[in-house]
Image 1 (tube, rainbow, N blue to C red):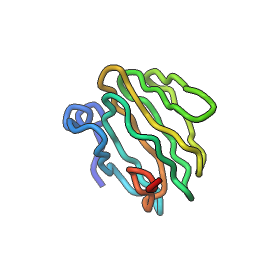
Image 2: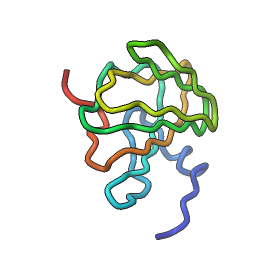
Image 3: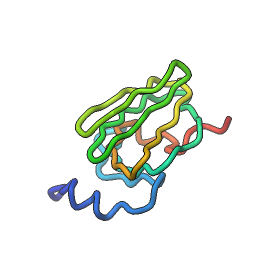
Length: 108
């Protein structure tokens, strides 16, 4: 494996809501995604999802309320929790989740 330059990847990930796999560790993926606006409400039936903000500000909305995440902050969405991510300006996050996770959520 070669060195991963996260700053360079931020410049390369241009399409919102289309995560790219950076590396796989056993059955877990480290992914990067661009967030721009609001994604649709969804859940992951069997998988937890960890958001780590690299650049910008991201909100994670759940039915209990919203959490604001700034750069270098993270939030764990537990399996089965309806949520959506959103941003007022473009932002980039790392996602840590099982490789089998449907990155766009389960159909509701």
